[in-house]
Amino acid sequence: MAEVTLYHWEPNANSGKPMLALMEKGVTFDSHYIDMLNFDQHRPEYLAINPQGTIPAMTHRGTWGDRVLVESTAIMEYVNEQFDGPDLMPGDARDRWRIRWWMKFMDQWLAPSFSMFGWKFFVGPNALKAHGQDKIEAQIARIPLPERQTAWRKAVFGLFSEAEMAESGRRIGVGIQMLEAELGKREWLASDQYSLADVNGFNLAYAMPLSQPHLANDDLTPNIMRWLRAIYRRPATRECWKLGRTPMASRVEILEQDYIPPRDESEGIASGVR
Amino acid sequence: MSMILYHGEPNGPSLAVLAALAESGVEAECRPINLLAGDRHTLPGLTDAVARDMGVEGEGPVLVVDGEAMTESVFIAQFLDERGKQSLQPREAFAHWQMLMWCRRITERCAPAAAFLGCRAYAAGKLGSPAIASADLAARWAAVQAGDFPEEQVADSVRHVTATVQLVEDQLADGRDWLMGPLTLADFESYGWLTGMVALVPEAFAGQDRATAWLARVRAHPAVQNALAQATGANPEQSWAPGPEINRWG
Image 1 (tube, each protein chain N blue to C red):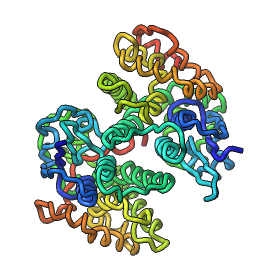
Image 2 (image 1 turned 90 degrees about the vertical axis):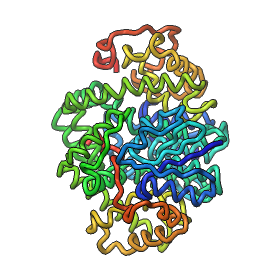
Image 3 (image 1 turned 135 degrees about the horizontal axis):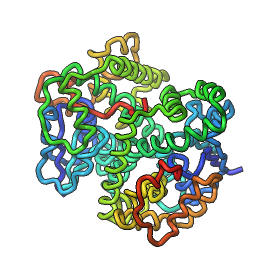
Image 4 (image 1 turned 60 degrees about the vertical axis):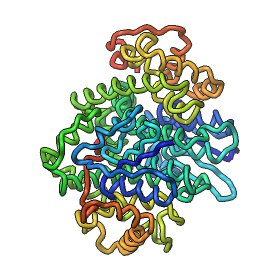
């Protein structure tokens, strides 16, 4: 048994961040798949590990006993500091500041807007289809964090308001432009070396050419596309995405295309492409 | 390298960064600005303003290094610490993770609530009208200026402040002086957001003797005294400006 066990869903968003960081560092870990749409994260056996019922979580066994770590970006920082392997934070303090700034911006400002679309068009409808209304009410009632209960209710029952969706759409547009501009300054996001910001950003952005084809493509965002393809070519990325079990993970294959033209917004996430 | 720290009155994130600067030993020119007037949005000589314009923290200090605007008080404090004495962050990875998690808890849950309650008490109707690049920060300015403080958010903010004080109280239960054991930037960050809440949410501190004693201990620390000495008014803990947004997901 490996010292490290990672409890994760698909290589995507929060779950994908520590998965990819561990693989980039070359850390062997036991992969424990948590099926989010089956509410595995709210079952007693998982709540015994992470009482908040959020994914991912990581345990690290050593002379200290079992450490339990949560919050994907903070787990990545731990992985980078704790284990040998390539350093995923640069040596310069200002570069590290910039990487932390971008990770917070993505985690707290941009990613929730992407999530709102993902939950409205994919997570909510698929969970409702799989469980039915009565059963899903009971599942939601078992969620430990009140804000996650709210999020699930909104997703499952289509309760995101037009104003909320419009604001998320605005932020996605602004955020993509900011990423494009930032990636025009340097080879990697926020510094001149591949770092945790790139691991974080790839998990947020790898499917944008599919889900936001009118905003992210080779004509409008060449810097983003160069960056996504460079990360996709890395061996760790290829290995990481093999751990996906649903079509969600296979979206990454769009990055094998040499040229991705703009397409209409209606062909993106709202069409069921996710 | 030129380094200029633009800061508001020593409260909230400005206090945290001023204290970290003092403790780090790093040399930087400190320039007080009026956050309520919108001075932060007209800083001179910026060659890269992305972090100033789009920072999640809202109206906080800005450290300008060679023209690049650096924001987010925890990350500025980390930068200063790493450039200086390196005494404010645990070296061991798990202890460092614990400190980062604590700071994230403060900036995500406590800071939006404290800024909301602080603005409600002291800032409404007192704001200038700068050009603000971020549409959502501009909306928070407009709400404060209009006195738009929904009761549901008031109650929710009081709950978050109360929960944070309880967290501090519990964290100190083993008799430690500082939140992480040794003094870290988590003490400065937490103190900055909480000290002004003593007057606004007194019930949160009632009977919380360890948290109250910790507040006094942090206040007495030389780095915090150094920060407080830069106040231009009598009550810096009453100085608030629009801060981080309250979680959009409910």
